[in-house]
Amino acid sequence: MTQEFVIETHDQYPRKCVFTVFGEDRLKEMNIQIGAEMTVSFDIDAHEYNGRWFNDIRAWRAVPAQAAAPAPGMPAGVPSPATTMAEPTATVPVANEPEDDLPF
Image (cartoon, rainbow, N blue to C red; front, side):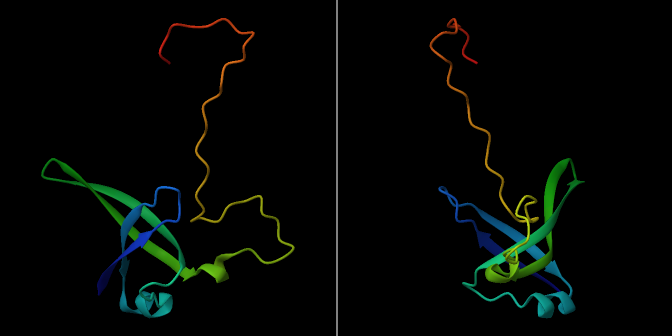
């Protein structure tokens, strides 16, 4: 048995992602409810069919958001699998550096 779910992130610009859970035992174990705040860990796989590529996103773990938070006293240096890393930001040139006319 396979079931699809859609999650939405809480970023500045929220994103939606559809993932599947394979197996009745995993569906019962994860117990995903509509509207619940969850932290989902999943594997992404791509495959080709008739010259087109398709992504397969399968969840292997889903826990309530509070249960996924690190316990007090644990180091927070290593992100959890579902933690979103900040995107690198562009640096602003310093006034003392020569200006380039290049667009990049």
